Image 1: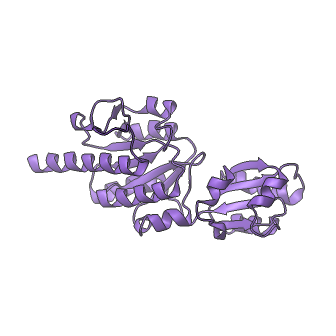
Image 2: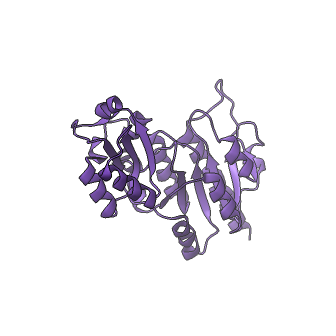
Length: 259
């Protein structure tokens, strides 16, 4: 898990090490994606860091000293390493407000455990070009807004808000109260061309290996499949997201022109 959090290209620049540095990062308002604490560390400064982490609802993991030493760029971690986000996260309310400000039905992209920063960056880039109002990602078992994500998004992170939530399924339930329907990508579902993907919609894309998790799939209103004619049966997550996003764009455009 820690290897993935460092990113695929050694993004150590976003690592904050040392007790005072981590405490100051929290208190200065810096967004911390995840906190690693060495097993057995229980002294005062560590307790202060834990309180700050709980206050900010930061994910904490406890790891062995040997693993901390491997992750630390300097070897001077003092039992604590924080991963700072390269960009600030928005709220789900910010995303809904963006749709309202444009006078458009909400068009949201929800990502279930996307771990590859290149995939996340590419999805954010496509979401911006497709006119989606924002992207929602979970706090656990998923990559955050790393420098690689920012680079791969090609500037889209400056325009497309990304919200980070504790529980994706609960977020879907709350958004249903706003009149939003949810469709998830599922290779065994009806083809996307046969589905009504107009109106307020949230598109749920699953992880690269497992797809949409069962618990999240059960929260969705229906599923849609991308027709495939080749010898393999799956697409890269960012490619699948792009294909489904533009089917939504196509249907929305046709609905507007037919009125």
